[in-house]
Image (cartoon, rainbow, N blue to C red; front, side, top):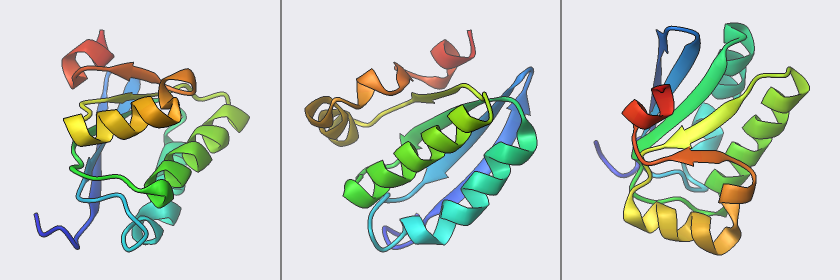
Length: 113
């Protein structure tokens, strides 16, 4: 996928909705998916897993999007977790302390258990 492109797709697996995110989560891309993402998680009413295995880069705008989505889910009593962090994204999560906000799994298989 072109680095300037971002995409999301979702699938329901049992009682969970998996949201696959593709592309850089940066200031150029996050605004393109924010509304659709919030609508998607609201309409499902299911636990949400963000699969970020195809996200090579995240900026503060991407972190803001995840935290905004987390707050939105908490208001609706929907649990949210993240899986599949690439090493560069994992480093950012470690520095910022995102693991204190989110349950983070190494991959989708572990998140679905």
